View 1: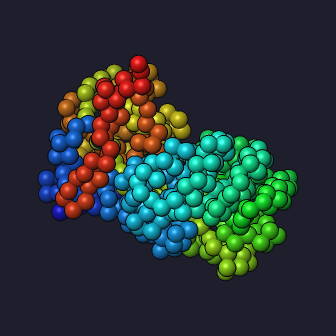
View 2: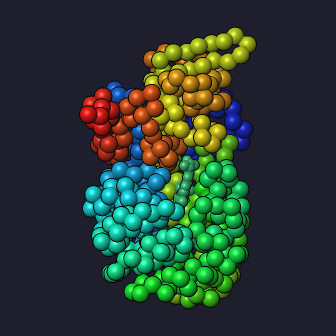
Length: 434
Ligand code: LLP
């Protein structure tokens, strides 16, 4: 097996770093990318491009890592990537599942996940979403606002559904403003410092038949250091004690590396830091601690494979490499200016000596996938190009902009590929219209 580089300190011509690829990924003797025992070029041939490819063993390994630390108090945040197959996989590996809308709830139920293993979030749950969640008997509903408390008063029978309160701890996590959620100025949850969280507890407990025994906070996403999580735990500990709450979910938010030059902590080291801080904050052992990772489970498990259709060189300016997808399958560069790497699966060990901007096929200039990418000098029209670390918030945020059909999703493992979501068709595009 040909080797490729480990962590490269400065983004450069170096081939793609191993830590950005799914665990089963390697280069075969000819330098071709293999994932799950299958050559990516063969997958593109069989399933077409663009194509979302997930390493099933990688997904399972990450779920196992979360469950090893927190048991079923580790919930997979389905917003990061949801298909029925993914919901089943997370459940099979022992995770619970977190949903934030009625739509996510229905997909997870359709996957056959038992309702008691589903946690329901949302800052604006409708009456019908609440009714449905209680009717099917979800494990937990996270109460997010005073208006929601009023809606809950009309529920006659909560059955076995337990409630938690979403607390806003007032922390500014170091991440992009749009994915920061723990600060005071937020649409989510009840503020701790103003006393709203305490008042909400009283109000919820005045509803007949409710069991409110948990607190939940989520301070943001793509967080790469543990300080904000430590602060969150420290702030929440007295609140848990004051209200005798016996479940505390720290949220999701653990970041991943997107570029050769980046590195990210593992789920296990995050779990260890959480446990240590809970002990330091004197949270009693009988309080169940939980996490809700999305990105850290699925991001690195997935890659996107595109085909290059045009290469436009503007002398003295830059080279545009256009692929057959774009902001409709990965809106993250446009939304958050997120950086990605790109490489050719036909020769993943080659130096990437040519500076390029990888763009999509949408009718707008902002349709950028890789702002400052590098590809081997012999890149040509017809080549396949792969962007790694697209497993989180790519397929789940995909759109039909410009009436582009959404790519299929395949899981690969042990030399086998299976379609977990087929490619959209023109019939799909037209199905809503009379
Ligand atoms: N729990 C709650 C309540 C959340 O709101 C989120 C993410 C998670 C868990 C999972 O967070 P993760 O572990 O994936 O960071 N679209 C953005 C990310 C938005 C995250 C929203 N909430 C992106 O592409 O970066």
